[in-house]
Amino acid sequence: MNIYIVEPVGKFFHTEKELLKFLISEKSSKKLKVKVLNYTIEYDNDADVFLNSATEQIELDTKLNGVLGDEYSESVQKFIQMFKDLAPKSPWDSSKIRLSALKVLEQLQITPPTKEEFSKVVKRNSEYILYNVSDSVEWYKAVLSVYPFRKLTETCRTERIHAVTKGSTWDGHRTPTNMLKNFEKAKLSSK
Image 1 (spheres, rainbow, N blue to C red):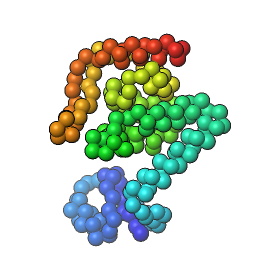
Image 2: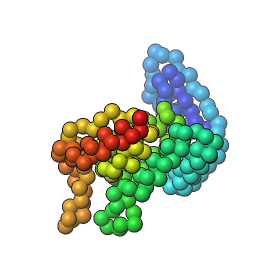
Image 3: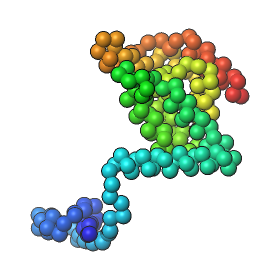
């Protein structure tokens, strides 16, 4: 199969017919170049299968790095396992975690367990990780082992499930004192 790339405009086309149509309509004073790339399809499968395969490979790499003595990979592995265990359950099926937690978990699982990459994902999902998973000292220790948060904010947003509709809403409120105390305990014990 071919892909046609037109430079310097940076457009690409999958068929020669589309390319010709563009070249006819593009009558500019710029000199355009056409590059033709020939490629073969290496993989053709469902996106879910591909995602699961990539997730399994990253989990395997994380476990292997942990066994080989990489402390950060070991911390990542424990953190992800705790996230799976502590994440809020779905109101419809208590054997599964909530959709919002699942989205965060998938991001964590597909991220390589390097400090640079993994800490970016933790920081990006910090609101959910810090305020919606658990308020236990053990959880905060696991969080601090993968990202060095300094403190919790005075206010936060947490996900609430409506008792009747089972739909979720996000409520803003003061951060519970228990969360603040347990975070500080975890921070002191991890030093």
